[in-house]
Amino acid sequence: MLLNIEHRTQYIYSEPVNYTIQQLRLTPQDGFGQHVKRWEIRVNGHLQRHADTFGNIVHTLVLDGAHDEITIVAVGEVETGVDSAAHPEDNIPLEFYLRTTPLTQADEAIKTFAAKTVGGAQAIDALKLEKLMKAVIKHVRYKKGTTAIGTTAAEAFEQGAGVGQDQTHVFISCCRSLGLPARYVSGYLFTHDSSLMESHAWVDVCLADTGWISLDVSNACRTNGMHVRLAAGLDYRDACPISGARVGGGDEKMEVNVIVNQMQQSQQ
Image 1: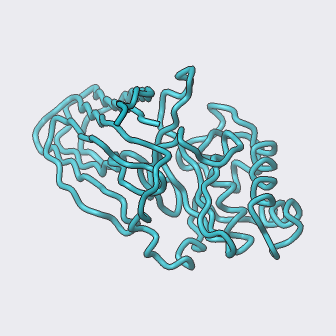
Image 2 (image 1 turned 90 degrees about the vertical axis):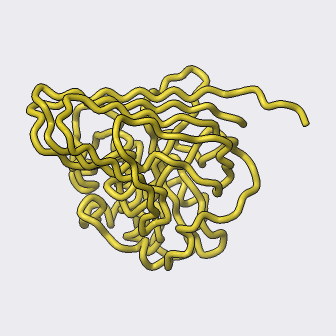
Image 3 (image 1 turned 90 degrees about the horizontal axis):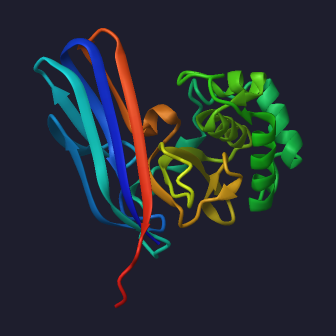
């Protein structure tokens, strides 16, 4: 499947901003069944590119002159469902993805829930993982406005509601409590009805017998040709599309719009 993607993020400030620095994880790479045919980032500022610990391509954006808005547009074409080499992040030892973070710390309630759902930590296969995934979204119902960016897995699990980020964190927390390496993945999802107009998230989990598999917790399915991978890490903070800081600016208004369309592929 050939997908055309446009991801537009606009920040508008009530007062002039004196200085902005942002980390943009907005560049997909070849690997995990996808091939990047064309990609660029358009922004009213200087970009410096580097690779982070996880192998993600990151651009540092710096604006050191007075400004009252920032517009960032990532646009390009990505082919999915193709054979491709492993992503550089696979060179990281598996044990690293057993590390907990403040957002994914498993409390006793999560540990008990995970063990009870899969019947213990032994001989966990893909079918048991899918059972766990469905149990998570049944327990943590999708409901906007109930959580914030800093909400932890334990908090979302306790209140039984959240958004995709929360469901993803809870699932990662469950997996790590069972001794399964897991990582947070950010990216895009194509839907035929264009119902998802924002970035998406899912989870990679490593099983002893099959290696890494990717599960879209919010949609209770494995990833497929509808998904385009951007970045990965231990949690949302490692993989979020944009993060940063500013000096000045007063109140901030942010608008995000993502358009993912299927394109016709030319016959060879």
